[in-house]
Image (cartoon, rainbow, N blue to C red):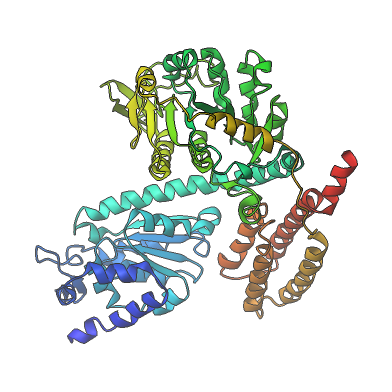
Length: 597
């Protein structure tokens, strides 16, 4: 067999990857210095099969005698049109080609090959251009970020089908990098699966909460004027970690002249150590947050304490708070696309300590001091007394928790959630470009911060702000806590209803002879999908409906009259949500507000 014939598709495949702007194209260019040497590893083995020669001289295929049946299981999928396959290790494409030719076009295939020379050899043997151009096949750079990004593009397959992670057995012989990449990929898939499963519910609840909070939020003011107003301020971010019980009373006795901020759910612990923050912040959307009030000993303690609350919070929790309240719009909600110019729209993250750091950095503080930010627990207590989780002494679970040693040589415990939040905080603190200090109490070390104790803070003046800076910032907070001009948006329901009715009539017509109109049906559903996505204000609340319609477009091999019920249900839910939003944010919502006034 001629050398050219061995690699006849390489150039065309590389050009297709470059045309698709796939990062793997540049990764291959930079990763294979000796292209000739890489391609020379391809040979025809004793069985007459194309093979790839390993460093020991043997071929990956000739050492896999069960090759004829090795990949049979890869095609045994219950719902191939809705599923996706992720392959780690591609050899010369035997398993990949088996999947590509045995699944419908809607079945997505990701290939993660750790070695660029192996991938280069594979690309020379088969013409993958039709699959690349159809969006069915992607080759992924084997890095944390690229694998994560590629996995996140499989959201429809995760929600409506299954993702099959295939570990190529012949490739495992090449080196340990294949097992390592399989482990990494499995972790990314598991994390994203949990995220999506909860997002389907969370988005509905959170944006629903925003609509219920909308009118009050307009009356409670805007944080936008606070940008840069905390210059010269030292901010102390208080957490409810176990060390607060020790360091909190010391700070309460000698607070210095710093600005103290905590989470709303930390307030019961603050009350018990006698340390009252200057403001608190809350982002948790769950109605379980109501329990924190049961742990407050004196509700009047909150009456002059400003609360900055995420508009995604449960309205009942917000209404019960007796002090001043100022709304915080966060990414993923109503403000994501349309409030950017006239509101602070913050990426809140999943941890309120991280949110506080981001907010205070945006406000322009000159120094940040952390206290009670332990991100871990010793063997006997998980939180400071007063916190609603204080009594929940957590035993070590090796499947969920991490055991390590603190800076004092003591054994402490943490979990994935805490450590993920710690990494987010560390990343943000590195970008903050201000000095960061951690009043250490035996918890997890926070990289990028300087470990101090309370006495050292006083000796070095770390709890001091510039004269008048703290007072100016608190005065600015009081000033923004007043009704703001309410934006009014044009109602959408009537025009949307008319347009979607017309689309439905066409859909019904096509469904009379579905076999003849498969492409027409798919194109129509895609137009309806784009219609549902058209309005950036309404898009966050329509997340589930957009996902469901996208599933009909991209995860169906063929259409039948039975699909009409699902289609109608999606449109009904979407129109009900549009009507609900019109009633809150459109002219009708303004009329209700004026009538109430």
